[in-house]
Length: 171
Image 1 (cartoon, rainbow, N blue to C red):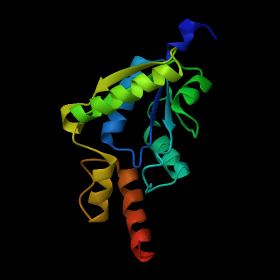
Image 2: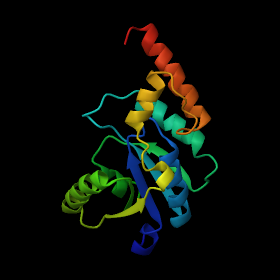
Image 3: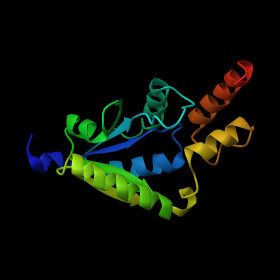
Image 4: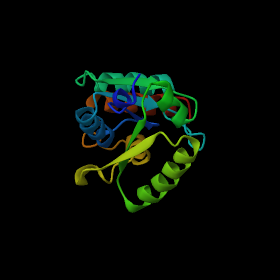
């Protein structure tokens, strides 16, 4: 694969627990910028997930269906290795706030140390999505709030179902 063709593939990595409208906006915008966009669903050992990796992959596949150049894959290795394995050299990331910028800056420098051939491209969150986070969405779902402004219907349904499961299990 030539270097020129590698630049037309990007990876948008994240935990996506759950995927929300801010993520989907970045996916839609990224799919317009790159010939192929791979959404990489990973794990964060510092967080306890609401959904399994497999469930997150399935939810993402449902909601990205309108974008034929987007595919969803899970990964368990370092993100730079995943990016290289799918044949990309560009990582797509979103920025919501100044605190995002600080953590993304550190992560980007570390990723460059690990693999200097992989670049990170940032897209600013649109203002109406800049306050949305998966953590807040899980809290809204847990306390029975309206999810319609934050997630697609398929994700809202899955969240409500998961909250019912957790309550019936005493979590």
